[in-house]
Every structure is written in C-alpha cells, then in structure tokens.
Picture 1 (cartoon, rainbow, N blue to C red):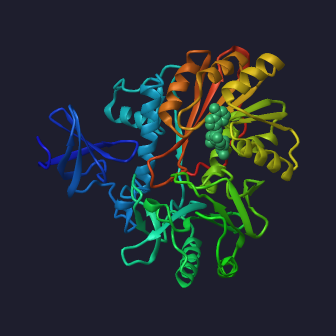
Picture 2: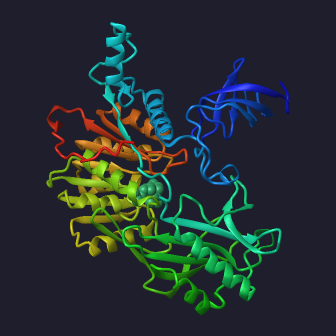
Picture 3: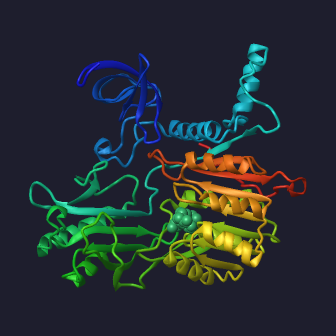
Amino acid sequence: MKKNDEFELLIHDMTDQGEGIGKQDGFTWFVKDAVIGDRIRARAMKLKKNYGYARLMEVLEPSACRVPERCPVARQCGGCQLQMMSYPEQLRFKERKVWSNLRRIGGLDGLRLPGAESAKQEKCQNAGKNDGEINTDSASVEMEPIIGMENPWRYRNKAQFPFGYGRDGKVKTGFYAGRTHSIIENDDCYLGTEENKAVLKAVKDVMEERGIEPYQEEIHAGLVRHVLIRKGFSTGQLMVCFVINGDKLPYEEEFVERLLRIPGMTSISFNVNRERTNVIMGRRTVHLYGPGYIEDKIGDVSYQISPLSFYQVNPVQTERLYNTALEFAGLDGTEIVWDLYCGIGTISLFLARRAKWVYGVEIVPEAIEDARRNASLNGIENATFFTGKAEEVLPRRYEEYSERADVIVVDPPRKGCDEACLETIVRMEPDRVVYVSCDSATLARDVKYLTANGYQVSRVRCCDMFPMSGHVETVCLLSNRKPDSYVHLNLKMEDYYRI
Ligand code: SAH
C-alpha cells in the first residue's frame, strides 16, 4: 500500500476524536467522517509503520447508525465530530468509551455496561447456559444509563465568533476549520442559540456601513477579532462582548442601539486584546451598556456571569451533572465537604445547602472572587474558598490545620489529578470521593490509584454535556472500604433522562 492507493474498508470502531477506525491485514486506518458500521472506499493519505490515515472517498454501504448531517459545513468545521451518527448511537459510543477506559486503564474488570445484567439474563434464558462473559464477583458494578438530552441541538449558552474578510472583500464570521485559522462562514451554528444570528447581523451591518475592519491575523491589523455571545438560559438575558485589537470601539452608540433591538440584550462590552496570540480574550474589559454581567440559574442557585468568567456551556446538562454529583455525595447535612478544582464554585454552592461546610479550591484567583460573590448572592454562608493548586492547598490545610473531610469532590481539567492531591485524599480518609471527569483516560488512571489505596468504585454514570462532539463527562463514586463508612444513599434523582 502506498499514498493515494484506494481500497475498501469496514469501520469497526471510533477514536475519542470521532475518527472511524478500520483494520486491514493487521494495519489500522483512521478515517475522518466515517462512522462505525460503514463500509467505505478510502484513499491512503499518510502511512506510518503499522497505522495510517485515509480519506473517506465514498460510503459504499452506510452504517445503520448513520444519519444525514444537519449542518451544511459539518465536515469542514471540525466542531461536531459525531454529527453523522444518530444521537442514541452517540450516547452508546460515549458509554463504551468510558467503560473500556475504566476497564483497560483503571483495571475495573468487574465494570459492566448499563443494561448488561438484563441483557445477560435474556441471553442466558435463550441459550440455556451462562457463557461466562460477564464477571459477577462482588466488585462488579453496573454503570448507570448515560444522561442524554431530549433535544441535543442549540444547547450551548456561549459562542465566540472570529471575524475576517471573505474573498468578496466583505466582513465574514463563522468558525475556524478544524485545527486551522481559516474561517468557515457560518452565522447560525445549530449548537448555539437562535439569537446568535441576529447579533452577528447587527455587528456586521454596522461594521460594513461604517467601514470598521475585522482583524487580519497574518498582518496583525484591523480591529474586530471576535464577538463573544452568552445567554442565560433560565433568564433570557444576553451578553455581547467585542474582542478588539484597539483601545476603543468606534461608533459604540450605534452598535449599542442596534444590539438593543434584540430582545433580552442585557450587557454590552468590549475587551482589549492587542497581542499577537491565539488566546481569545485580553485582560481589560470596558462596559458600554448594562451592569457588566448577566444572570443565570442552575437548579435554584443564581450566578452572575461576566465576560471573563468561566461558566459551563450546557446549562441543562450541567444541572443534571451536578445533581448526579450531589446524589453520589450522599449528604445529610452533617458533612465536611471539599470541592477541589471548584472554578467559580458552581458545584460547591450546589453542595453547600446539603452539607455542614464546603471548602472550595481553585487555581484561578478571579474564579475564586466569582465563587465568593456567588455565595453571598445566594446567602450561602457555610462555604470557604481557597486560591491555589489543589495539590498544594489540600496537603497544607491537612498538615498545618488538621482539616478533615467526609466527602471530597474533584472536577479536574483533562490532565486529571496530581498525585500529591490523590495521596492527600487517601490520607484524609473521606468516606466518599466523587470524581467528576471530562477525560475518562485520566479518570481511569486516578481511579486505579484510589482503588489501590483503600477505595472501591461503587457507582459510575456518564452525562452528555457536548452532544455531536466526542467528549463526555463521567461521575464516579468511590467509597472508602473501611467497614464503618457504609452509608445508605437515600437521595435519588427522580428522572433517568434516558433517551
Ligand atoms: N467545577 C467547576 C470547574 C471545573 S473545570 C465547574 O463545574 O464549573 C476545572 C477547574 O480546575 C478550572 O477552573 C481550572 O482553572 C482549575 N484548575 C486547573 N488546575 C488546577 C489545580 N492544579 N488546582 C486547582 N484548580 C485547578
């Protein structure tokens, strides 16, 4: 086989990034845009020793889970890796990914996929014997069904649109094509809110009428780099923030007047970013209209969100994710809880109303300021927030102040927890560790450490925060194996949200 050779391939699996995987004569091929179950004609593009990348030329026999792409630029854009897979199949794919990482990397041999027990019983009844495929020892745990969305579109409350010139010399906006900086024109992404289109039109109209230039990265010239749009789903409030390569937004009254015609417009600002950088936002924000923030609610906790604040992008699923974490935490009001990697304190505040005291730890100082402000906004007085690295703050508080924990919640970035953090967790001997993870490979690695040090996995549940993408969140409950830490988890989520 050499470059540009064409061949037939059956796709039997997919990578975390949503590329199809096919095998041929012991050689593994990765094919973008191919779906599990497709039989395709592929063209060899890049060959390595025992794997290669191929281009999808034609779908010869479509997979049963293949659906037409809804978005006209789905293949170029790169934001939705799974759009051509039916939504129920996306959910199965994500569950399998987490399951296989927890078994393979985490060593959880007894972990079963949701519904595995009933499937097994049926199979046994039919076959009249146990085929021994499924481990039923005491350490065996069945994953709970993934929490999917009823409507997996228009779920994002935030979008950052880059601006540039089109070939026709007009101002254009859209998304960066996968891993590049060329703009694919699109002002109505189906993952974003309906209002984005009206906001972008208002901005483009004023820019064209007044000759305001979009930023041109190659020559570091022009003004408007990005427009950030956020919506509070529960309040309907809208925020627009221009990111500009300058200290002033010309014709600001005109921009404000146009944008205020859009119902819900609450906050308009600009952010100064004059650097040659990939980072979208600069540090300084100037408010042109409104209070400088919008408000939103998750469950019954209110949050003020300013342009620079971190805030989860899928509020519907965030509430379900946090409810799962809360349920796994099994609080009865007497517990000391630590929430490590707490961001703006969203999980901490959720837990505080059911706990005796919550301690949040987060590395970004501005996020801790938001967390404290949000605590007082909600009248929550039993939460303390520390700025610093979890792996430094937790050991220090434990050693110098003999601080203790009944429950520890962690929600680390993709790289997972630092070992010094895990080591202190083990020394503090909380009854339960609730691990919220956005990367099941590092979750599995950390679970392996905790299970080797006195904990056992008792519940696992995935939550689909990013439909159409390959990402998935997982909540995992680890219980201390010491005999007196057994608890009845009597808090139950009413709904299973199962699709
Ligand atoms: N629990 C929050 C945020 C989770 S994102 C929420 O649900 O909204 C992970 C957070 O960990 C980010 O806010 C990031 O700034 C923070 N972080 C990254 N490394 C850290 C470290 N070593 N110690 C503490 N916080 C860290």
